[in-house]
Image (cartoon, rainbow, N blue to C red; front, side, top):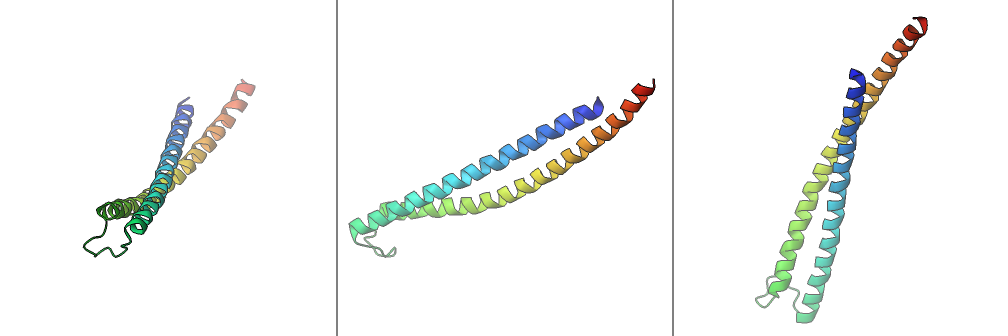
Length: 119
């Protein structure tokens, strides 16, 4: 019974780690999509104003702000990639722990069966 609880707890940990990895991956996809949208807005604004030089005094303030947001998103995406890699490693560790717990449960279960058959 004690091993059964350990296996259930380990399964729960694995599911939780998988959920975390999936959420981080979804966030990364959202950040990438938003960055592409901001690139499009920047391009459109530069095309509309006719000024593409960021250092030009008349460069669009909207385009400057959009560039800043895009750059911040890209930095956040880099950080998320690091977090995703760390989460994947912890997921792999949890999965290995689950395999070990299931093996221990099977081994202990195998010991109990012959005893009950003999008794």
